Image 1: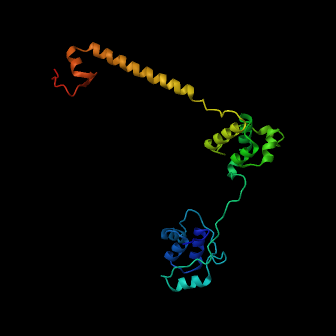
Image 2: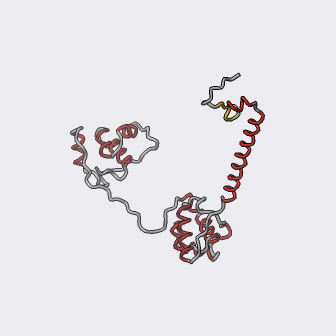
Image 3: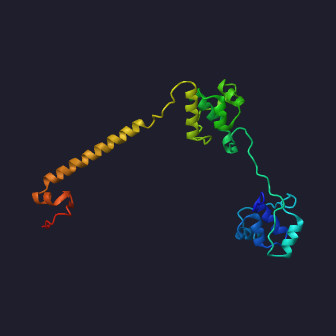
Length: 234
């Protein structure tokens, strides 16, 4: 069943302006009855501004009257709200992050100049005019723009950035760069694990060498007896 465009706000209006039951309102709005109860008791997390479903064309006055006269009547949606379709255009960026866009753009231009303005526009969600201004350093706020990784800024994902870089490198006929930042750390970890394993082997051999023949025959590791041997412990 179709639901109102703003279920909670519609439920708030119906609670305040009609005598419909909570069950009827909950079913029409697609909410749980306890949510409607919370709205009626003003215990909801935020105070809601009611939305008139009659003016919105989602419900008729006659439907409300039928529902008020019969508690078992199920309200029928008059006209379901049309789905909002996102138009083609730049990627949406929250207001709190929009001030970071120039820094992210500058980082890509500086570190990956092969990435086209169109790709940057899709990654960051900006216009080609802004990108061109930063590229030729004519941006009005250029003095305060510093290159920062757009992934760290939350403007795009690492996968999308890597895909754009690889595509740009392929178009330029060059091999896509590989991330070698953690190669040294990986090699150091392997050496550390190898050294630790060799140290344990030496310690075990030393412990076995210092132990008596009886202990050697009864233990497979210092302090661990062989469960398949019945040698009594003295």
